[in-house]
Amino acid sequence: MPSIPLSYADIAADIAARIAAGEYEPGSKLPSYSELADLYSVSVSTAARSVALLRDRGVVVGAPGRGVFVKEPDPGRG
Image (cartoon, rainbow, N blue to C red):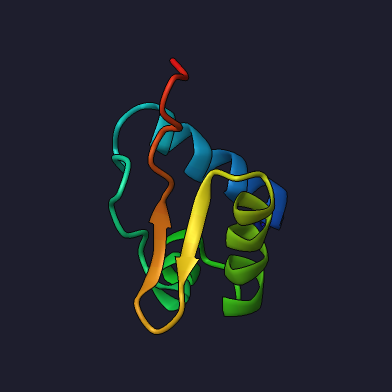
């Protein structure tokens, strides 16, 4: 029986966990949408929705033409 593909929310949660664990450090670039799609065995649009969810939550920031980066911690927090 084939496995059920992860939802975009599941992928976003996994990426957030990887950020929290230090796998993706503040200021580091996330893999491209196509790389994430391959990593999680989902479509590019699902990978893009995952990143959009993280962007909406303030976890990552997009830089047009450069990629998506882990947000630096806000000064005075933490």
